Amino acid sequence: MKETPVAVVTGGSRGIGKAVARELAGWGYRLVLVARSRENLEAARADLAAERSLTGADLPDIEAVDLADAEAVRRAAAAIAARHGRVDLLFNGAGISIPGSFDLDEAVFSRLLAVNLRAPFLFMREIIPVMLRRGQGRIINVASRNGKVAVAGLGGYSASKFGLMGLGESAYRELSAGGISVTTICPGWVNTDMAAGEGASLAPEKMIQPEDIACTVRWLLSLGTSVRVMDVLLECAGDVERRASVELAKLYALRDRHREEFDNLVL
Image (cartoon, rainbow, N blue to C red):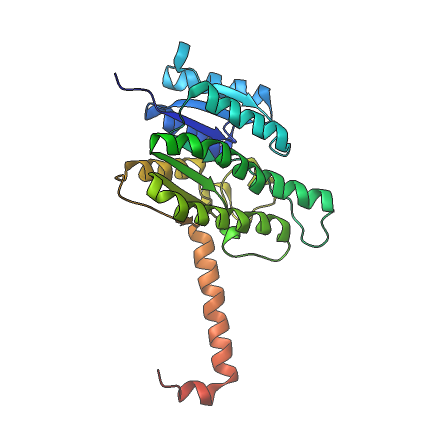
């Protein structure tokens, strides 16, 4: 008899994580939802149960844990691995964003690193051995476009996401031979409470939607076991257009300042 695959989704009570959990439930995964608020987790479990007609043993497990608490994260990850005996997919979707760079309080900077980088590391460290024993598994980390291109005023957040990119790339190269696929998704503005709290420059309908991330996960899951995808960059169309216009304006200004050199440029 075929065993039910197990997916662990951090940040699974809302936003990106909840959308991905909904998608995975449709693919037949047994879900383990991880977030800080038990109340939000219970609400998410009830929503998923109603939407996907889940009952009994098919209901998602929930783990309420503060991802900034290293010992609590270690205990939760180890308990999940022991309880289920298998993890087919680890989706590290939880994250926080706090603006600031060198003006950040040290404790705030540490919290950014703890939630956005250390927590995924700890979950991976506990769950990778479970995957290796079975010779298969998939890890999907959610970083950010700011994990590829840092911007002024988000030094702490960008540092945490650049770190997650580096961790993911190392894991991608180290674990492939063991049958484990590791992918980092790097979205721009996503229509979530986090984006609203940061004063996003785009209207909600112009942003990437949580369901778009879920569709990306669906695509990754649809690929054959011989395929590896290291990272996926998702951008808002409006951002791409605006940056292209700005770069073009810079090019024209440079041409006008150095017209003779530009006209004689040989490519």
